[in-house]
Length: 229
Picture 1 (cartoon, rainbow, N blue to C red):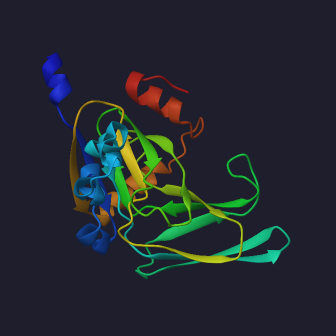
Picture 2: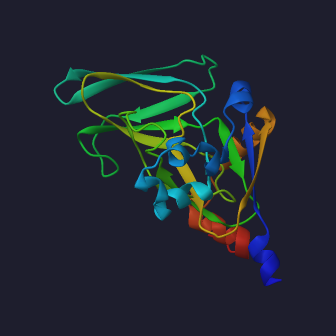
């Protein structure tokens, strides 16, 4: 029984409402996005256990569209953020915060990129998200790390900082800015589906507000143990 529990793969099901993302930019095992120089170079860096192991497990989500961001100072210390998605599908969305808060320093703006992929897992397994600097090290933005649990939260949104200064930058489609690593030795089994209806269902489910409050730990305890908040 112990052997079966360790070898049983963790099943992740991804659902998208974006047809071209499903066709061209599916989520996949992190090993599919390993930099080519790691196998073709004689550099000693490629033999680094920590670097290589970060690609052996986990998964990545390629960006599904070029994203252009323009920052312009409108008043001392105040910046206006404008953006354009190359896909022009109307499905790609982004928000930004200009004011300073503990979440981001005064010198940077915080952006939230709403992912076109929802993820569903039937097990209580946490995933750590870390910036993948090897995908595009000169993208000029800083992606935020975190921890997710796809049994209770389904969105794969990405947060990143942009330095407050007059600038134009482009994050390219196909860039894999984050690697998600399961906190488990078990391997992953990944399925990807184009299913706008299921995507909308999971999106709505993720935004439901229980009567006690939108609190992750209370939801987790209620589902796992039948406890009320």
